[in-house]
Image (cartoon, rainbow, N blue to C red; front, side, top):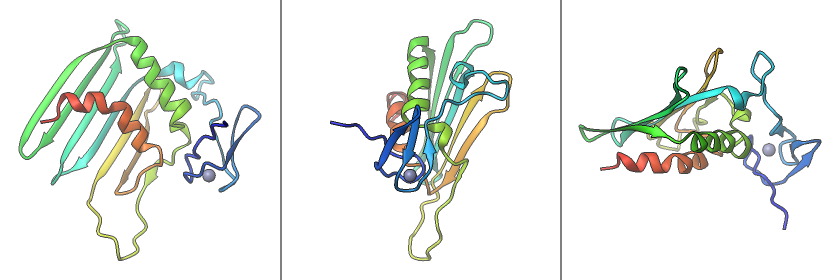
Amino acid sequence: MSEEKMCPHCGSRETEVREGHYYCRNCGREFGRDKETNNGEPLKEKLTGLRFGIGNEKDGVLRIRIAKEAQTDEVVYEVYQAKNGFINKKADIMDTAVWNRLVNTLVDECFVCDWDRQYYPVNDGATLYQGVGWRLDLIVEGEDEITYQGIDAYPVYLARVRRLLAPYAAMVRK
Ligand SMILES: [Zn+2]
């Protein structure tokens, strides 16, 4: 059994390992190279938080913020849901090991560094769009945040990221 990784660019599983990263035979693009910060440090070690939000006015909005406190190194999370005029919030401390696993999964399994920065649907005149906006900000210590966003169009790995964050979303679900 081989386990081909899904290409974050086109969603194909026609991928192969090449020199420590991946190559997609379908779209011809690479992914999964080790990412560094502008200072040349491993990105994963410098990720100190994230913000994720998704939703629209009609169906409700979910927001999750996770951040490592600079002073204490404690990882805190906040989950917020606004739906049908009700707001539900939850905040607590997250085990550092859980945060580290989350970062590893985002970078090494969801290939977040290979996502486009913006996703918008092709206007074919036939599809009725829901106006669902989403945004993922990666917080990098000492550097600008990395933002990915879209409306009614998603990276192929966004569903995986939502599953990853599902336990937190469940805390505020009415
Ligand atoms: Zn591809």
